[in-house]
Length: 427
Image 1 (spheres, rainbow, N blue to C red):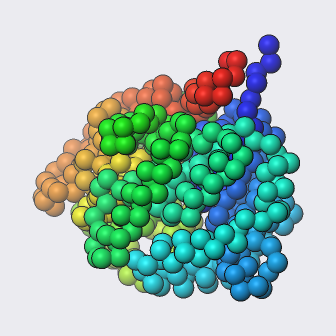
Image 2: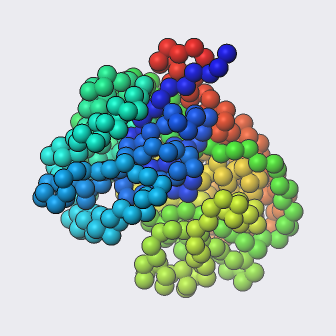
Image 3: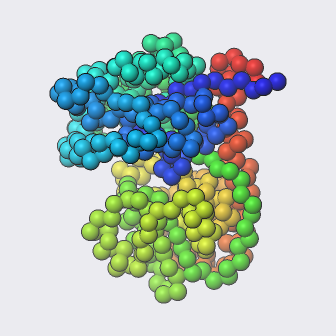
């Protein structure tokens, strides 16, 4: 009997991607779905991954502004593989930078712009009607306009809404000013509206799923980034030469790398940072001072090779009060990739946040709390650096954990079972 797959309209700020965090997670979730069963409506100026999906519709803040001021007749467009790089990226980035310059008011201004409903166009409706989706899958963030669009389209087309949260902007956020207090109140309102309307709910990881289930009194299921199974590559470097960090430097993560690098005094150890984050003058100065080498981000086989060349894979989370709260329930998308490599993982930061808890609680790496004094940090680092057998054993344990928990074929199949059950399809 042939499998029956639903047609899914994916609604998110970011497009499918084989390099960017949310895009990679989305691809892992839908990895077993046939390509022609996926359509995506997205709102950032990303260049989508056409190797994964052929059908995209993009609406940006700049499109909305141009429509409001009658510069364009339409608002948004179907994205083809031959025109995906021809979007007005500079203009859109200028618009976004202007709004960000207003700091805490950015989200409010953005939502007001989208409230004009200029995005409701015949071209969008035709694109959806031609696709005839069975369900809407929405990645919920902290902008009200996308929540409003998800609920609106769900009601307009009488489609079940499935909602997925990858970051927590509500339970543990710490407003720093009046505007952020107002924004948190707004988030609570549109979260409740979306969650109450949703037929199925997901969150990134067990911790967020449990806490959201308890808070909203509706069941959340955990699902996070997963990857294809790789053969185990034995680790045989008895002396540490390379410590590598792969990922963004935002949320003050770069400061954690600087602190750790300043403590590691050995001239024989190189600390590499692979990132697509913009390096500010302050970052460049601090990295140069403590000997951190910044390199361009990698993907595909190049990424896998550099991960496997590393003796220690570093994951950091900021320990300042604001970012500590922001990352409490979120799990980094790179953790499964680290684990699948079979290399030793070192976590550095607040031990209570979800990424650190995953590493620590499952014994698949070692987490050093940034609350420790520098002297205690030196002692713990020396224990790790001098113990080859420990690094090898924990790396293998991490690989086995990845095989059991982050096989994308298995996890995607389990996800589709829930979708099919919702739609009452035969499995």
